[in-house]
Length: 283
Image (cartoon, rainbow, N blue to C red; front, side, top):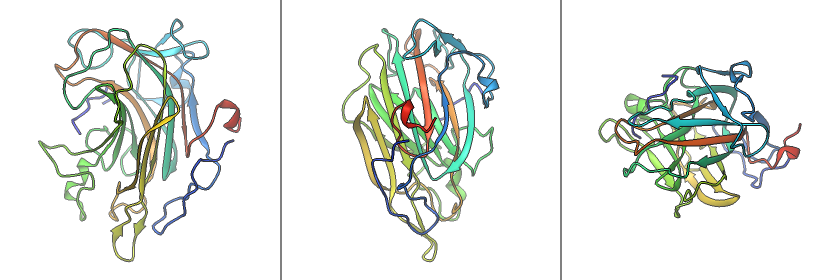
């Protein structure tokens, strides 16, 4: 995965999975909403967000409610000028789910490369609350890439770990496993709903081996467009690894921004499994 410079440095799950050795949590339980953000105002730092300092809330473009967060890039830049990246910690979990609504500006352009722009990430308890996403023990990526929905993972920091890398060999100092939708989905300037679910693989501690049962799923406007159920996301070097941090960090690599453009995000939910609408989230 190419490096990412950051401005900041009740409905049952549809699937019931059996538990496994190695501490993986079964999904056969009611999902818990870990946090929700409606982006109706700019007081994010008062709602447990951190490591950001400016937020533009658009009242003209919201998917729902009074506002949505706006990220606008000026020409020849990498990070948005309107809003900074920001982070949020949550209770550690083996399975993480996110739902959000996203809208790209009418003139949105892609990089012409097989990487970038980055949009948002999850990292784990194996790294600190200010650790950057580009070189960690495990970083997950949720982002649009040349019109497709990309879910991805990298674990660059594990290159010297006893069991090594799980997300492919280093190429130019970076690695990554990519799970893209087959179709180009981001093709207009309308609001779309993106969902993603990641489940850490279990571990066979007795044999010192990971089980190939990690899960990555993605939905676009309610349709399943990415599904993999036989993945390895961690090794036995990290038996206590859990997801515990979310980063919203839109970013284009140097020289990759095609022109001035914007995106908006609204009504974000992070949970321990796939949840329904607001009325099903236990509130």
